[in-house]
Length: 111
Image (cartoon, rainbow, N blue to C red; front, side):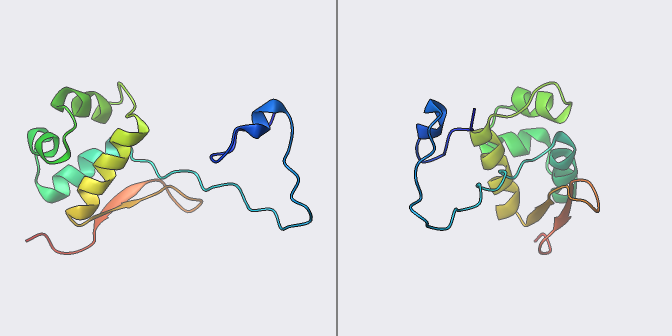
């Protein structure tokens, strides 16, 4: 069975919409993720405690603890919020690729 489309779930019925000869768009890119290791490293670069991150991101302290320790995964909305918090503070989150694993670096000097 085909995966449901982000726009329509017509694929879930086993029918593919006709493209009438038009070019087929590639599937959407995998959403960027954040790992617990990246979260800890980013906090260290910014010299933030978990309490600081919880206050700045709005994600509960216990959730952050469990996420960083690998006891749970964040929901997509929480992961997106965490990434945006770090990005707005000047941290670049590097996704894993063929040449290496995920990482972090500073985009600009921390004031």
